[in-house]
Length: 332
Image (tube, rainbow, N blue to C red):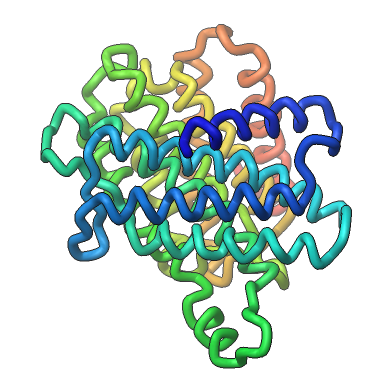
């Protein structure tokens, strides 16, 4: 039940912090993932599905959230050990089956909305959906690299390949409107926003970071072409507008996270030279436009965040040096 799942999560978390592998191995992980999958099925069946959306009561939504967060914690432990090649390969594969089922369950029941239609609960459901985006990204990107195959069934392999990037499209369709809403609420002071709203946006920034920076095999980004440009432009308009930058957003954890993501993007486009399969010059222009707003972030921070300020200054200096190398005759 949900209590057992929570207790198991505590054991996993404690084990992860200590670095020990004595509490949860792949065999135990497979059992826990299967139980979480079964519990998720029960919760979704108590709700009402309509056009891909799932309507849950606040109580069921809370349980849905607990399951999702437990899956994320357990999956993080699994991928860490998987990368090390630890334990029996057959046991590693046993965890993939319930993980793949959970991925499809969340995809089939996303987003989650309040069955009672109470607008006062919107922020809690938004936070739930942002967490669901994270689990979609974490599970989806894993199965992108290590596809799940049902033994002895070539048809299932074809179906999996055809649906391989469904999770990307699902997240993309959810995030872009959320960024548009962010811009519409730009006149609301960050300190006046409920904590759930801030947490939701902070979590969504993590998802955006994965979509903009994470790679598939062969060095290509998860998002390509027009979708990459659209998400990058929405991110720019939401957090780095050329006019009307909100001071409280800059100084919030959300704003500093956005600045950190921009710095990572700058390093990719102007240092590592990675190409998301679209016109890199156009993408560089968008990143440079965003970078031109970073000095305003520094002014609004006023030295309150020395580590962030130092990183931003180093990035701006790097861009300036790179510009001089690329165009030594430039006047500015």
